[in-house]
Amino acid sequence: MPNRPARPAHRATVTRVERLTPHMIRVVVGGEGLRAITAGEYTDHYVKVLFPRPGVAYPEPFDQGVVRETMPPAEWPAIRTYTVRKWLPEVPEMWLDFVVHGDEGIAGPWAARARPGDPFLFMGPSGAYAPGADAAWHLLAGDESALPAIGAALERMPAGATVRAFIEVSGPDEEQKLETHADAEIVWLHRGSSRPGSLLGPAVRDCAFPEGRVHAFVHGEANLVKELRAYLRKECAIPLDQLSISGYWRLGMNEDGWQSSKREWNQQVEREQERPAV
Image (cartoon, rainbow, N blue to C red; front, top):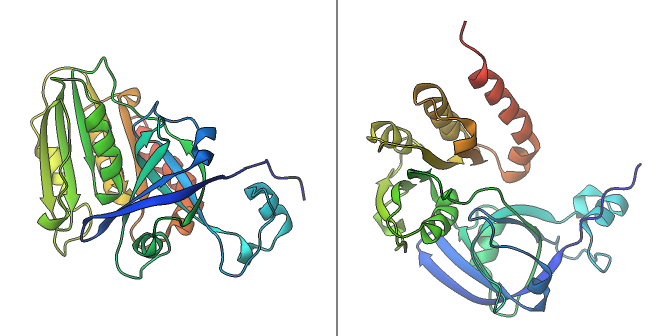
């Protein structure tokens, strides 16, 4: 078996925990381990959070490549991807918001139990999007999974920037106060028991787009994102370089299943939607 590339992890410590809404918990981490990372260029920075398996001892210093090379898959840490809601390098401090649905999943229950002093192990950050300064206006659209990145983007917008933001959540008690200096129209969509994305797609389609060059950030459930990608690319003729658009998750799959199939899914979507008309 060839040697896997080194993937060293960073260590931090939980410093505080805040319940933002009934289903959203903010975990703030700090510590000297954060001084080894660089962040702030993008508003969609994300980290790969590592959740060690109970009772398993890992080699130190922790390196994901070494773990996968020397340990059986059943002992590998679970990995979940989370957006950095805020990065404060002067502290240093990193905020991450977790969607929690009771005991469902791995990361949500961990966040619900997290207390100051708990260890936090992660890789990254990575990222690709920040609001373009040359855009005439900005479109932000997503569900709960995209809310941290949308919040970070709104904070980064310059004063007076024109923004149309659509955020789908389960109900009014899941809304959050979002700070921005932009001229932002923020629309909260409450889906109740409806399928995720069922309100977000029609809301974006019904929006009267302002004039000029748009820079769009559209993330959330994969099927919804696929639908909106087709609309923005084909019907609105928005070039790819003006779009940051990707599925953060897919209905009916956990993150392990989605991440293993995401590349193939995206390639298939591109083939279908970028095929020239006959």
